[in-house]
Length: 358
Image (cartoon, rainbow, N blue to C red; front, side):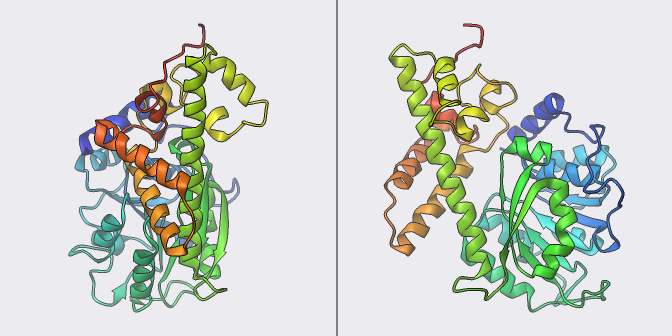
């Protein structure tokens, strides 16, 4: 799986100027990163994380990175980026550490494992830990509580204790590449404001969701719930568009014709006009490259599992969530777990490729 991910990163770098030689993007044309943000660690260099890290480098931050895949680390090393063998080594070298990992188990290991970020007793060098992974709320709550028991090895400016921000993202690999992600951020408002240069070097917006104890629901529940609901809506939208386009083809209406209709009518949505699932209709999206290099179906299946669990806990009806969960589980069990989630058009609905010139 790691080799497949590396191949995906290499192929996309050729197509999308992944390497640092691409045009510089900064959070401000007249500023350099402030002292408390200059040394940034980044852990998790998959399809999303690698591009987020690259945008931070282009914005002028001094990055140190770690990933379980040594081949990916070698790629960054060849670009002149310092790499570390363990999360703890990243922690010891940085003032801020960002994690972008695929599951709760990965996050727990990176934070609390034998060589994790919190390995050094109750003392931390980083004043700020930012987790952008999509994981279950309970894991996030536990980690936040654990970090609150730590103290800084030395004061960093006005910061006397470590903070954690929960900052899941909305946006595809394309958005990670172009630096147009949306961050949903919870935690200390002061830490959020101080970290905004980081968020706006990787994204177009950062929405502050609150701090611990604000309102009747904790900030972690708010950020995780927002991300879970967003991806639920995205899954249902993609399946709806895929189903309609495949049905149209079966009834003799080309997907290109339907897409034109959708995109100037009430069916218009992101899955149709920005991330079309029909191979041949749109350049620069996963469907144009055999569904490689996007948001993996296994990750969508994971998010739908979280949505089902959340709906059960909340006592809400979830018929569309349940059906979408079954479809993506079937895609994964059929060997398409690494393909972008838009592959449902081809591999579930048996839709056909449709070259633009047909």
